Length: 81
Image (cartoon, rainbow, N blue to C red; front, side, top):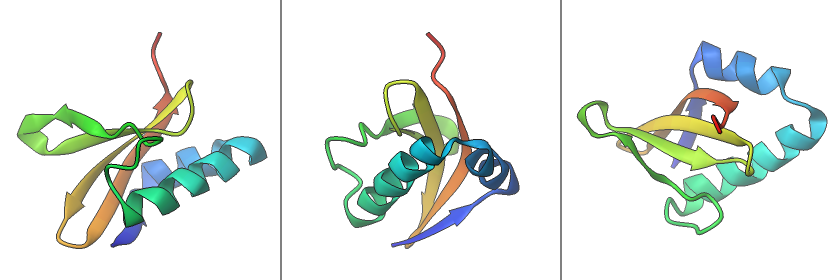
């Protein structure tokens, strides 16, 4: 699979700390190899729009869609508590 970013997601990524970028890079790498990798905790977020949620760490999530062989990251945000 390939990875692509919406402008919003890229801006969100660039705003992350160096430590969070490293964690995000690891999660994205795992995601394109295996959607079901346990550390990603991937799950459907919005069934009607085929939006998924994945975990960067306990405080940050990323939202994405998938079409054919492309994972398209929509946004990265703090997990609401």
